Length: 288
Image (cartoon, one colour):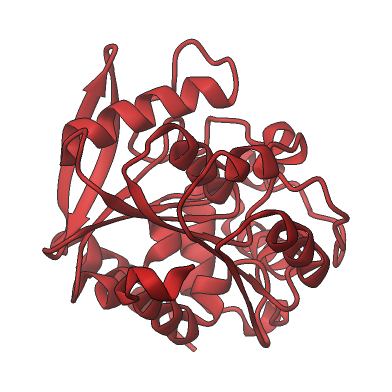
């Protein structure tokens, strides 16, 4: 298990490798981080998240692609969207700054996790130049959830500046919602990423995530899609949702990752990296 110092060093090293770009739209900035070279792959993080949701995936993908990872508007280093009228206020700056960054007509591959999966589905519906789309544990399906336990509020611990209590609460919440492993087995890297992301989240995604829209957005897409869940993902019953989506979406491929919870690309990084690299390199005739 990592110690806090090692976790911070890993984050600092990856941060130092990034090409950080602040791209403006209507006076508000979206922070993008770039890695590697080649065909562009865009990774969208989940709610109460940041670009570091992809810490264990970026370098594997950047060995073969130009990887672009934003802090979504209202998260991390990005400005809050104005006006704040829900998902449309986030999508507009996302698409506009992405196009400014890579070019409006440039084909991209797009990967979204959790709330970022719902955002990615809507981006793909509105931007025809999304070649491949991969969603990991996407929300917005309105299917049954299977909570592992109640989440605990961390704001009291922040207000009292009680670091040990905050750490305990974050471990508990990660075990209840994000990871399948027990709280005592969660290493400081996950705690560090989750804590910092929660503290810097200003966009409220919960109601949007529960409100649906995933199927409608995917139905507007004409290209192939990959959907993957950890087998213990608490935000869905993966096999039921996968069947419902694949029955209605031609060219939809589904995968389940054993032993993983919701934050599947962190908990089973090697499995997800292999899956995504194979998907991104697949010949078009193999994706139908």
